Length: 115
Length: 111
Image (tube, rainbow over all chains, first blue to last red; front, side, top):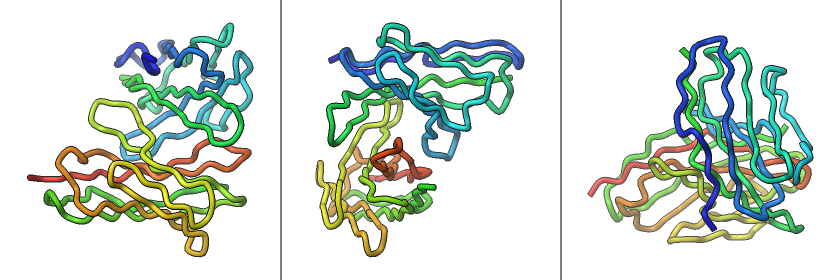
């Protein structure tokens, strides 16, 4: 168990550029979540996958955001035409849903700064 | 919708002091309740949980009791250590929804 890994740890970009983040979940975890956390706030849900299917998207996820999880393994989160308001920590979590209680394991996050 | 309110920080304590971090929630159903902890430079980790009313979650000397009548899930520890310095998040999960977090409370423990 190597834990949930996210890449990159930090990303600085200029407004209007596109960025892509990657998340590698714990192997065999069938659920993968993306959250966003701004300074002084708790994590806010963005979207989640069960295997390769994207099952839910938050209203926070504008059409500039897209997430994929090909083959139900790693996931990518892309932000197009970044805005300064997109600056935040993007967190990925994975879990193995087997019924009953679901425990999420979080990565350390990708800190995005949009200049 | 669901929401979680927790006390603002930072909470500053001396080592071996008693800790309480208040958390109240609003939910339409019968949620499960959690406390997560985030140590500096690390990802969020589940600290403890309670899945029904009157359950007490406990771990590493921390505990919290699910109080349905007051919609609360306050975190307590009898004697904090410097290594407990971190940000603590209260969260809830309804059967049909994903985790909803509070804003977090920073705890600073000095020797």
